[in-house]
Image (cartoon, rainbow, N blue to C red):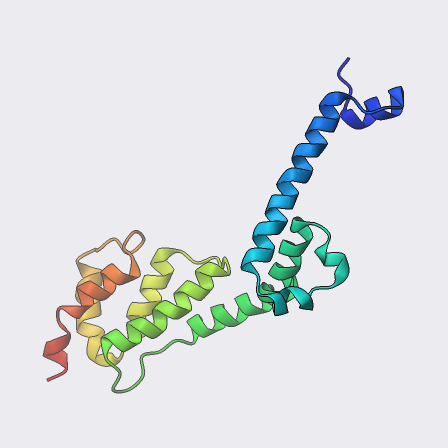
Length: 170
């Protein structure tokens, strides 16, 4: 009969040598992990943590994650804001294609980082449809040539659009 280490402690009243070895290895790994965390975390940030969060490397890591990323509720709000920013995105008057791409790429990366459910095609279509009216002809050509927007990266779409830009800026 297989018995877990915890059960064997209760049954025999003692700890087996294998369990002792396992516990020593765990303590050794935890000590090394804590040493690495203390090495890379600035002292003033570490001191901001509550004492109960300093017990194990796992607790330290989770406290830092919560402090810098926020709680689940904060992350959900950040995701909503990122999605809203993306939905409200428009090319600004007198803005170059590069500036528009740069601004939009920041929004796309925020949405991806926060795990917003959007496909690559959604990102690309949103970018195309929100260029200024002077880009309508180019954007229609791209759609008519049936470029695969669901697999094309945003940068590749930008590069394809970049070709005709000098004609429009004259």
